[in-house]
Amino acid sequence: MKLFGYFRSSTSYRLRIALNLKGLDYENIPVDLRTSEQKGAAFTSRNPFGSVPMLEADGRDRAQSMALLEWLEEAYPDPPLLPAGLEDRYTCRELTYAVATEIHAVNNLPVLKYLQDPLGHSQEDVDLWYRHWLARTLDPVEKRLAQLGAGDFLFDRPGIFEVVLLPQIYNARKFAYDLSDKPHLTRIEGACRALDAFRRAYPDNQTDSPDFKGD
Image (cartoon, rainbow, N blue to C red; front, side):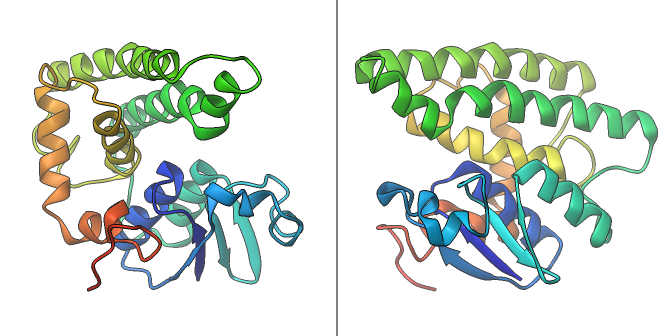
């Protein structure tokens, strides 16, 4: 497998975590979003979406992170990213898709760039926008976790919820979002960050990160 991604891309971060949790070997191939490499003809000829991550696997180029996570779960079911029971699977999807669709969709890099150019908003406006959409979803996610009595993970082990959550928590901290009133989310963050699968996926531990210090 070859994973084409960018060290700070939250969707690439998702795939790195999932591949690590499943114990799958892959080659990490950096795509520089700062120079719009993903929009170049060489890349879009393989991935018309012009986005990362892209996973080259089983003779096919696969795009779109949530579809990729579902494919990984079906192609490599052990260890699972989803719990066994029907209701638990629903709960997992409820929280996962809240984060993936309500936060990431409105806060990803193309949206933030568009707010500034051509719409003319300042960086202060963009930061306010970002934190607004974080609060709109992280507040109810925290409340749902409290209702469920979640511990270190949503269920007994990290799964698709944690795979999608951790990159958004990383982004929240980057935008100086106050997480002090989110004890369940920060406990899950800490438990995940202590695991090798998450440590290896962390943005600063990628070779294309300026903060990469080697193995």
